Structures are given as C-alpha cells and as structure tokens.
Image (cartoon, rainbow, N blue to C red; front, side):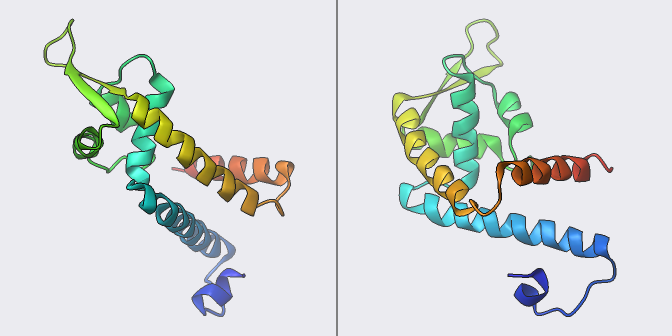
Length: 151
C-alpha cells in the first residue's frame, strides 16, 4: 500500500520529505512485525539484538561497551537488557580475569537454541518480501546506507 494511503495524506512537501517519512514509517512497521513475533518467545527486539551480537562473538565473551556500540538501537540500556537475559538464563556474566573492572558476557546454550527460533522468524520476514528480487533488495540496502552517510 502506498504511504499516502497508509497515512491518509494526499501529498508531501517534496520527494525527500516523502522519503524521510516513508523510511521512518516502514522501519517502525518492520520493528512492530518483528516484536509481535518475538513476544511469544519472551523476547524484545532489543534483547534479540543483544543475543545476536553475543552469538557473533561466541565463544569469545563480549563487554557491555562492545554490545552497546553494535546495537541497532544505540539508545537502549545494554546493562538492563543483559540483566533481563541473565534472569532468563540466556547469557552468563562474570568478571574478566585480566581486568576486574571489565565484565565478560557470553551467550548460553539456551540462548543459542532460542536464536534458532528467532532465525526462523527473520526467515519468515524475508520470505514475505519475495516480490522484491535480490538486486532490488541490494539496491534498497545501498540506498539506506547512502541515507545514513548524509550527515
């Protein structure tokens, strides 16, 4: 559905204004879709993001700083997110043996198993966009990169 129909707005000030609103609207729409599917697993999208970061580091530990700098939503409270994942048994946290001020965080086997389920959710989202061919998907990705480079 066209953005104008979704928002019940006839026009935008400029093509760039429409683009900005469309990127924000679509990002929020995708995030809501993902969040709704993660909810039955007891995960938020931010918690899923942290688990994905930790899987990428596995078997090496990660620090809170590393998690924070790699998160998609950099305003998220990584400490609070890790605490929630710790309560669920999805991560472990221990003091670094080399630097007592540093905390090492590692995904657990339970966390890795849960990510297999969330991978299926992401795969399902990818399949919903089969009307977009791989070249178009690559172009959209490149254009999104270009948007972020315009600061």
